Every structure is written in structure tokens, then in C-alpha cells.
Image: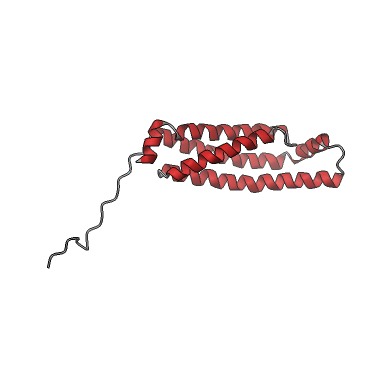
Length: 159
């Protein structure tokens, strides 16, 4: 009896082109961004007193309990968002390494949002070191986005 498609044969896997250096470098930069974000969370926790002083200086009309509430909200918010950001950095880095174009697009959108957040942090009542660290993390994002949109990277994501 004739079988047009043998049952024991498997379909050949589609071979993806090798990961170009621009994508490999972007992935390393994203891992560095994850590490920088984790360090940023630690900085936020260690500079709690400086954040409190910045809140008091910026809003002298606030009571001690209001200042404390704002301080706690800022620190808890930065820790929660920091953990989420670390997970996103790592997830997007891994998916970009695997050639998933949606990850490159998502990373670019998140970078745009991070740009707005970084500009907003300039006026936030936080310690100076925390504000400076936002710029370090932003530069990691900028580098990754530039590398992910180079021609060799685009060819890889289309592949």
C-alpha cells in the first residue's frame, strides 16, 4: 500500500540564522539593565532617609504622618515596580535572543515609557542618587533599543 507521507519521518526543523553580534550585545545590555534595576531598588531602600528629607523640603506644609505615608508609598512602589522591571528585562532579553520580534517591539515600547518615567523622576521627591540611577538604567535601555533596530538585528528578527 502506498503512503504519501511516511508516519515515522519528522518534518525538518526550520533553521534560524545565527544570532548576530548586535542582538547578542543587546541581550547582554538588557541583562545589565536588569542588574542595574535591581541595584536601583537597593538604592531606593538605602536612601529612605534622603527621600524623606526631599519630601519634607518639597512639601513643608505636610504633617509628619503624611510625609511618612508618602515616603512608604514611594519606597514600596519602587520595590514592586523594580521587581517587575527586572523580570521584564530578563524575559525580553531571552525572547530577543530567540528571535521573537514581539519582544523587540515590546522592549521598544517599554523604553519609550521608561523615557517618560525618567523625565518624571527628575521632579519626583527622591534622593539624588536614586534620580541619577534612573539615568543609568535608561542608558541601558537606549543602548539595547539601538542595537535591536540595527539592520543585522532586523534581518535576524525577520528570519
